[in-house]
Image 1 (cartoon, rainbow, N blue to C red):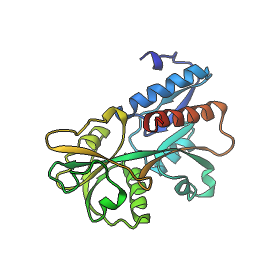
Image 2 (cartoon, rainbow, N blue to C red):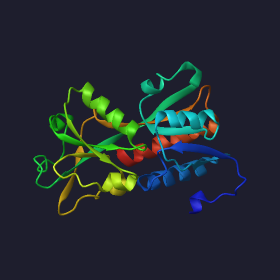
Image 3 (cartoon, helix red, strand yellow):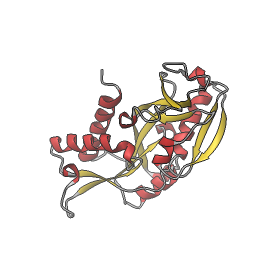
Length: 234
């Protein structure tokens, strides 16, 4: 709480998008800590968000409600926006993925998986306004790698449901968040790391075109540093 304490009238760097759920709190706290060490004049604040679709986040930026939006997509997708959107993007980090399977699943005896192991498997496709861009990105990576999967649609209204979904006979793909490193390691489920650079979840920052402010550049640098510390400690 000390990291987030600041006066109501303090100038802030408003961040919209995916970093407002419990899965991200340890990472967000570390980013705030690094920004404080840097002595930033405008500290980042994270806006609550119901939809992280690209179009909704673009609207938030156009209305000036946020200085930057963070979503799971790639810069080339952002580049397909109409020219009058006047936005630019920066890929911050590609987050490694894990597979959650039942202990009697054919893949359950592996200590890690590659993308090829997912071929012909049934993948749970989480649907809902918070997961559309993430799934689109993962689906595109599977397609580029010529991996054919069946999908099982499963609605989820929150990040909590996303992490705790029972995969039954299917495979659930989740981002490898340090805070949930042992989640789903239960009597019925296993969490298996996917060690394959071809399947990672791209976290991308979108902001108004032109040179980003010093505060935004510093924030994105610290965000990238935090993700690297968490996922690539070497």
